[in-house]
Image (tube, rainbow, N blue to C red; front, side):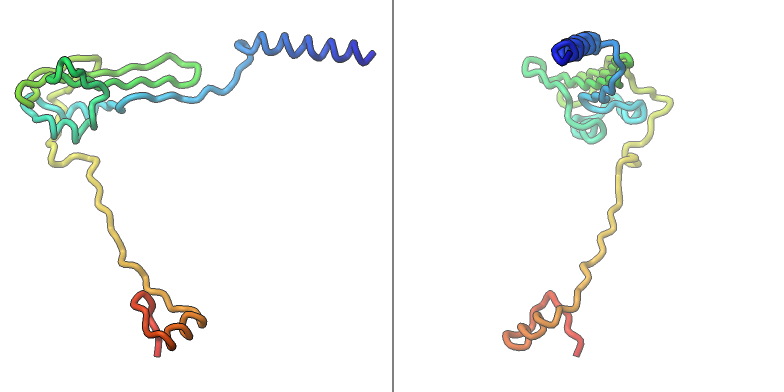
Length: 155
């Protein structure tokens, strides 16, 4: 009886693992490359230099050593079982100035914004460090060996 039960369980395990493609399972989202949004690409204009473009889009995904005047940005997104989404743009330079673009996503001059007001600028407020009052053991230490600048003593 036990041998029959073991045979049934092992057979069932083989069948279930063989049919695992049909059993729904979680698949993670996989993103690769530089994230290309239309808003970022719209900021690119013919006549910009490489530094400004690299500031907007980041470092190029592909830099071909045989074509130094061409930068390629590629972005792919595979969401679980859904279809693979691809976006790409190729930028062509002459003397470090953009002269041409090609690819599946293109800058729209009607929606272009001034690069000086780029949306990714951030202002970070840094508060000065708070000086803490030392504990009783540290106060005894300071009374014997002198004051420590990182602590504030109330006299």
